[in-house]
Image (cartoon, rainbow, N blue to C red):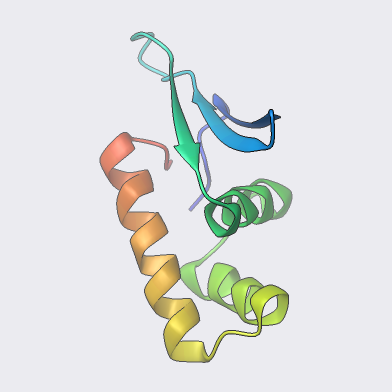
Length: 88
């Protein structure tokens, strides 16, 4: 998996904003995301190609989550990314 190129994370006034420029040319939009979600976006972009396991391992290391907790959080993020069309 990989994030679409038009998926850009910005920090504005202490808030994490995910700017999305869809590949199909439809209107751009922004999503406000929390810190762990922003961390997953940064990690996914740094890795390029990634798996759910890659993201889960990064969450475990960064936040001290158990494998089950990290997997649950990763699954939530991936579901949102799929719903929003952010994955290639």
